[in-house]
Image (tube, rainbow, N blue to C red; front, side, top):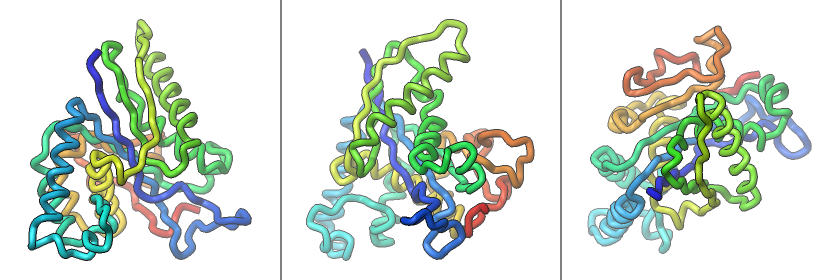
Length: 267
């Protein structure tokens, strides 16, 4: 069986409440969006080798090896939020020339009313509903074996990931005249041990930077790499209450097309 690999990572968090059930929507430090993305890879070995080679070159290059993000961490791995600007620019340039992956992403607008009615005030339900939207249509070949890797801190999320995949596959089959059986396995992994996740991390970082800060530089550089972006719950611009607005290479995501992304959250 041919193998296909899916690597999933996130940017932001699913939190609506702090300890003691205190609502943090609109407060300082609240993150109004959760982005979850994945890359779909056929040749895992080639992608991993390319990223590892990049990391080793940065560690050896006298122009980059003494940057704080590298020298402060003997086990340094690529992480957009912590890397120095020089590394960010260098890796984005590397990524826009890298072939062999497709990128898909879901943008979750954190609306507290939907969180209560649709997700039962459960951050876990909110998170894995987004994963479900992300995976729907991604596992579609009965002659393939799909290996899914999710970057997560908690190993207990593995069963919930499997449920999200099962639900996505069930929904896919409901659209088919003849249901198919998909073979897959899922695994929770650490970003520091999984170089392929650096690609997902940077793709999400560039998109989030554009949405929340209006800085389009990195997003523009990688624009050809965004195969699909689903904007969930954009009810401000699109009043038909669709679950998601789809953006692709035929309909490029742009802030002018989307409803306002509120930095203080959606009360």
